[in-house]
Length: 310
Figure (tube, rainbow, N blue to C red):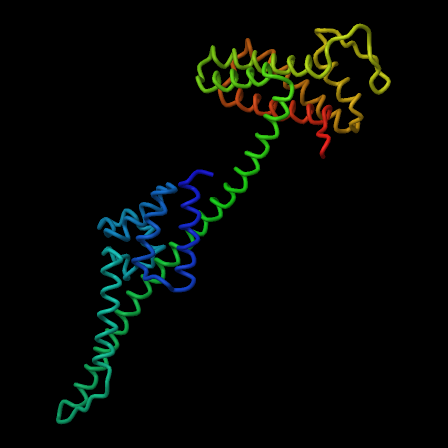
């Protein structure tokens, strides 16, 4: 896993804990999430965080994020100001509410009017505080949802990458056990697939077929006559590449179901790499053909040459 992804996973864990445990203000959480999207790019979420830091376009063009942040002020109008101002307004309304909310004594002819005006004043302060606090809370909720999704993706990528890295080490080890010629073909393949032009792809498909040939030569050199496999005589000459691979699998004592699956896979791959030399093949298809060949041959090698320690 890359250092940026590792740091992103750690940071996303922190942000989720900050929100769950109320350890940071809404503005602090937005700033921390902004660092996360610099490490792990997420363009849409980055736009939302920028709007919360700097304010929203006044034309309402980003109404979706405005709604998700709970910024409706009524009558299709929104609070466009930065989150820092929303928080400041909430704190100001709360402070005034606490200061003005104490008991007051009114006297004289204007008693009823003064009392009503005071109550209306407190009601407005409470409403303003509730709206501003609601926006801040909804922003935190939106950040939590987005960061949670990123956290799951990063955690999945970590597990997936670990599995692939282990598989690659195993595959390279199996192919390497057959000698340097086999791995040199793998290196040649990957170099050509990186080029991506038509001629390089054609050469890559040809090298892929030669890789299958090389594994067959290493596992079961050509021999005269036939070998009986599941009651069927198979030639094992130099040109009988797939037969020799099938014979090698049979002589390893592997179950028939597994052998049949590998036989079908190798037959399809061999046909595709043979016709792919002359047919038009996209770079994406060529990469998948290579990966399938790479893994299938490694399984065959493991089956015919099992690790004594396993």
